[in-house]
Every structure is written in structure tokens, then in C-alpha cells.
Length: 161
Image (cartoon, helix red, strand yellow):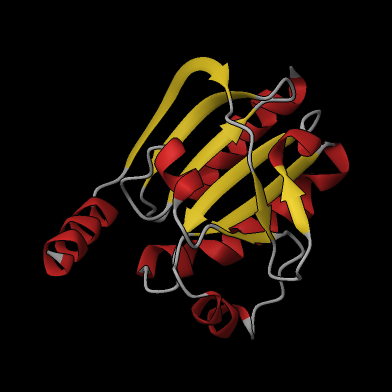
């Protein structure tokens, strides 16, 4: 059964979809960060948020992480934040992967996958863009070259609203 789950996860991580979605409230959650503090999504509302679900075993996730950092650096002064949600059962894998990365955005741990289930994460990575009012606005499943440019266009749109 675990092998089937892994095969399905790999299949979904190979397909890429992106869509503007009908606005709806982003489900609130509180998760512990890699630094040990609790972070609550609702406390970030007021900024545009890129919520990225990822795993260290996911090749596209590894490729995407530096792009997310560039977006964080470029737009944070305009009210934009990235929040990474690691979905692995063991935080050690995330720590090893991130050891040599210089990220300024928080990584929270969803080791029981409760938040991932709430957000219906089926592909790795899965990324939501949330507007300043806390509404889900864009959904991306998967990552490939060019996706960061789509993020940037959508971030600019949400910042201007």
C-alpha cells in the first residue's frame, strides 16, 4: 500500500496545473516551525501569502525552493510572505535538506499531515496564493521551469488589490 501511495505521489508531482480559484477563506492552522516557535496562519493575514507544501524527497520542490526565496526577498517590503509547509513525518529530513539553504521565510512542520489534508494536497509541491483578506486565490499543483514567473504575476496582482 505504501508503494502505491508513493507511485501516486510521484505521478501527481510530474503533472503541473495552475488555476485561479473562486475566493474562499483559507483554513486557519497553527504549526510548529523548524526554529521551535508556533506559527499561526491567521496571524499573517494582511499580507499576501504564498503557502507552499513540500517534501525533501520531491525533486521539483528542491528546484523550487531557491525561487521562493527570491520572491520573498523581492516582494516582502510590499507585504508579501512565503510560508513553507513540510509534510514529512520526520523533521530531520527537512533539516538535512535545508542545512545549506539560506531561507528567510519560515518552514512549519505538518508531520501528521492534518493541514495537508485540510488543503487537499495531492501533488508535490502544492502552492496556494492567499490574498490580504485571507482568501485562497490561486492554486498550483507541481512545479516546472516558468512556474516562478506565474507566481510573480499573481503576487503582483494580489499586492495591487
